[in-house]
Image (cartoon, rainbow, N blue to C red; front, top):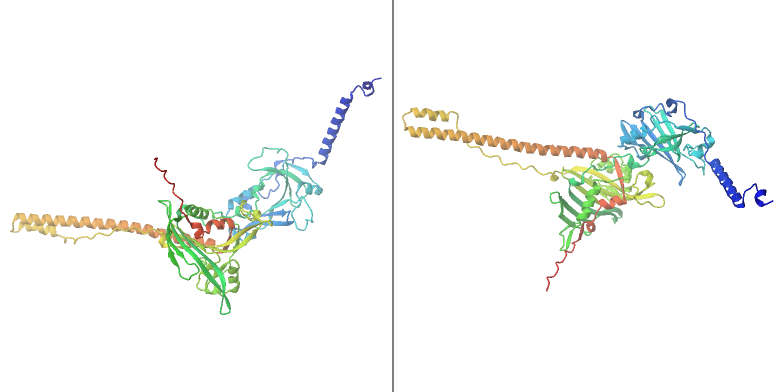
Length: 539
């Protein structure tokens, strides 16, 4: 009997192939066995599939809280935006205004009529598998995995109308076409066991600081910048009479103007101190020029100034940053300023550790940016720093405190050019022309009477014309003056509005932003580029 007969008619090669096929099928079964297993069960009706029927309108949302779990630090990172006194604020940032109202509406809308596609599990034992363990400090244990992100919405009465734990992403094909950033995620309603599969755009639940605030801090257009004053000084401690005093060490004060018609920067005044109390005025040396590119970069950076964090200023400091006597006599308030690199003086002025940049706008508004002490912001990606900002190993971004105020500078406005009001000749007395006409009837040469009548009529017409011209000039001057006065009022109102916005806050900018808006003499003045030499004429 041959080998083919003993093996059921299969050759050795066919036997090996069959074994491989059986082994592959076994591996497939094993793979299926270890995958998260769930029995898909579609809800009976659309109404039953809605997870949060109480949240039928995004306008009902009066607060939104997002709690994430930081696996590296093993800590919870809560973020909240609430409505307080008709204003949206960020409690995690000392109630800093949350100007991105549309973002809150978008986040709440994501939960409105949110439907479950199917139920994937009803067992609490599967919560870790699907990543939907609630980020609750009382429920989380060291080394635990599968912790989800909690999204909670409350209404004006404080009632919780939506609490969703968002877990892992499901890579399987959706039951309906996904669009607009939506993806399939495993979720569950906080406090309940069932795990659902839904379509949701989780980018709406951001905890980045800069996603919730007004990104345009200064609210200025770079094209409207007309003047820059770069006041470069530092503060140092000196001993005087056994007491430690703070001394202002001035370096340079550079006043620059920008002509938008010629698109050119010019040096108005350059004062050098070099440690002296009095300034020495200097000019650009031969072979030097203004670094226009850097000045343009500074101007553009002002129009897009980003902050990475804020801190509330002490009460008692006025909106225009004048330290009243009561304020400077408050040790706690003064300490708050000094810790951040600002020194309030009894005169009402404020000095800063790293000088000032003064920005003059064509509408008469002048910004004063005071640069304080260096600091750092923890968790750059969570606190709103630009993703391009470098962070250290601890996840902190280096930054600097910034005080901002606005003031009105009438010198920035172009004065109205009023035309001189013309003199009006003495008007002829009423009836002079008639008298001259009557005299024609008197016994006098007829030619003399006619001449007098003509002269009187011409004088009357001339006076009337001059009077009309005077009134025209006065009207035009009044129009010009009214326009100017309106600009003054508009600038003063804008200053008040800006200072109301800046009044309560220390801002923190990254070192990258600071380097753009804090230029010193070396950054403003450069060597002239050598002009290309003309080729020598051929011999």
